[in-house]
Every structure is written in structure tokens, then in C-alpha cells.
Length: 481
Image 1 (cartoon, rainbow, N blue to C red):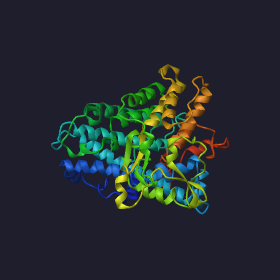
Image 2 (image 1 turned 90 degrees about the vertical axis):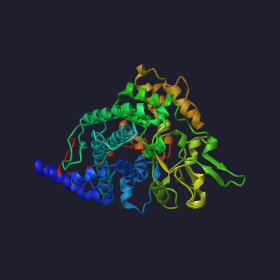
Image 3 (image 1 turned 90 degrees about the horizontal axis):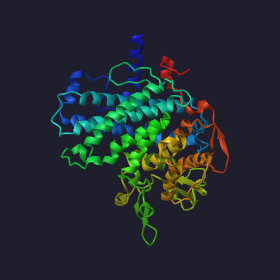
Image 4 (image 1 turned 180 degrees about the horizontal axis):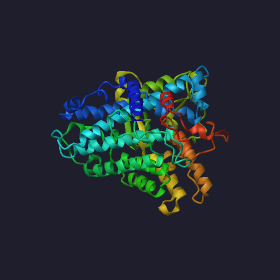
């Protein structure tokens, strides 16, 4: 059995490692690790490489926020010329392109997780290079949290929903960088491990993260914009997301309210979104809503993905703008294109490619965790567990007020509140890859068909769970069945 397990992981490494030249985990000797991490530069390079890998097209620069996850929400039309993608939208995952996509996500995610494992082990050694006090603690916390972020997305894709089957065990848990693929654990066990890591990371960041302490550092790594790193509030927001998923509503509410109440982040003002001159020419643009970004992953890959698939004349279009009121500031994310027969483009990531226009835009980031989600988490927790002390209607209405849409009646029934939470998820996460996971978490038997006119798409339980990559199925890693 041991021999077989080693062989499986060796195959996995062969499949995914060619894309990662900066740290070829699995083929480096212990001596070369020692050499690489003998200076601070090796640690900087490794952690920066993890962020870069996450921002690539296999993960959060393409597949996770847009190309793969968004069509599953039924909010978009897909070109009929793309047969495999049409089947993907219908939850037929076993096409050639579907299998390639699933393998790319799985393989790159695990490759990046293994690189986190390498860095975590090195940062825990006693004989580190001469870092400024607090820097190794911040880097270790980030590595733990990034690993947890990826593991949780693997759970949301490949395991059954926790509310349906918390014993689902399709996601191997690996915390080293050896040739064994990892432990077979249930969703419950894996999420316990992730929360433990995040609790440790949160504690370190509370003490050392300059986004909390306002401490000045001379170390060059600490000069990065902390909202583009896995900062204290991002860790706290991820804990809220995970606790929400496993129906631990009190804890999820507590973490969400920590982010909300600390006032480090704010909702964008409407005049900040698009500023034009008297002729209508854009002078400043922020369609991603940067003031709300608890963690935005920097990636220019998202711009290419958006241009090629969502901003053109022939590819994916938003089916309808019916979910948005006329006054909704989120309408800035969509554009009715007369050149495309008035079809609706997603322009959330759109920007000019001219060098002279670069100063008009904020950094190119993908929303990973943001303020609006924390309000929705807190509202849903308040609805589902009355002992949290929160007021679901007040929390929803704060978000609605900032989006300039009609607020919910303060005497709304629980059913009306839940319906409005779903409505806000449809509106709030356009182009971010989160709506499908909301549907799955709630095990919804039917979902909006994208027209927001009362029509729905019936969902089968199997629609919500991706099959394992073919090479994992062939070697029989695991199944929850």
C-alpha cells in the first residue's frame, strides 16, 4: 500500500510541476532547500511565488473567479460554438475540456499547497536568517492562511456540501512536501485543521501585522500593500466564510463583525467608481471597489481573461440586468453593448490597454474576500441563529443603502429575508466565482436561471460536486460514496 501511495503522488507531481520553475518541489534535495532558504531572499521569493501561482490562469487569474465557476451560476450565456463549455454549463463535467480544467485546478492547487508546506516548515526552523522582528511571524501566518484558502476551495469543489455529507473525503490533506499524497480526511476533520491554522495565523497577525498595529517596518516584504496580502482581517474573514459553511453561526457572526466593526474597510462612494470629464471620457476608474477589498489578489491575468471571454462581441454575456435596480452602483460592472446587439458584457475588470491610461486605474486585483460578503455572512448568521445578537434586516439594509437600492421592510419574515440574502448574493458577487458556492452551501434544489424573472434551473445534488481528476479516479484515491 505504501508503494502505491508514493507512486500516485509521484505521478501527480510529474503532471503539475513543469509549470513551476522557481521551486521544483519533489525533485530538490534537502541541501538545495538549505541553500535556497539560507538568505531572506529565498523566503521572499517563495512566498511571492505562491501568490503568483494563485494568480495564474489555472486558479484565481481565470478559472476560479470567471471562466470555470461563473457559468455554473446560470447567470451567463455561453457561445453555442463552444460545445464542451455548453455542456459544462449543464453540469456535464466529463468532457475533454472539463477534465482538462478540473485537472488544472486540482494539480495547480496542490502544487501551490505543497510550496506553502515547504515555506511553513522552513519558517518554523529555529535558525532563520536575520529577519526584522515580526517579519517571519507575518510570513508564516500568510503561508498558513493561503494554504487554508486553497484547501477550503478544494473542499467546496470536490467534496459534498458539509450540510449534506460532512464525512465526504475526496480532498487529501497534505502538510509536508514528500512523495506521499496526503491523508484521507473528512470535510469535518479538514475544516477543523484549517480553523486551527487560521486561529494561529490570526493570533500572530494581530500582534505583528502593520494593518492592525500601524507599526513601521524596514523589511522590504512588509512594504507590500497589506490588502493585497493575507492580512489579519483577511484571515478573520476567511474564518467567517468557513464557519458559515459548517453552520457554526455564532463563530461566523463574530468573525464577520470583527471585520465590519474595526472600520479598516469602507464601502465605495458612487463618485469614486467612474470619474469622467465633461465629454464623458474616463479619468479615474475603480469598478472592483478597492476600498472594500479585505484581500484582493494581484493578477494581471484576470484582465486577459475578462477581455477574451466577457468583454467582447461573441463569448460569454450576462443574461439579464433584472436583478439590479436602476440606481444600483453595481450596474457599473455591466454594459449593454450596442455593437453586440445589446447583449450585456461583464466589464468589472475592464481597462484600457494603452500605457498612457495606466494611471486611471487601481491595481489589477481579483476580490478574494471583501466587506460586502461580511455583511451577508453576518445577516445570514443572524437569521439562522437568533442567539448571535445580530439583526439580519439591519445588516442587509446597511449593504443595500450603500448599493443605493430599496431597503428591506424591518418587519420582513424569515422567508423574505432569506430570499433577499439570495438576491444580494446574485448582485454582489458578479464576476467573482462565489455565487455557485452559496447555492451549494445551502443545497438549493433550484436556482435563478439568470433572467431574475421567477424562472429557475432545477439542481440535482450531483451538480454541486466536481468529479476527481481522471488520474485520481484511475488510481482510486478516494470517494465519499
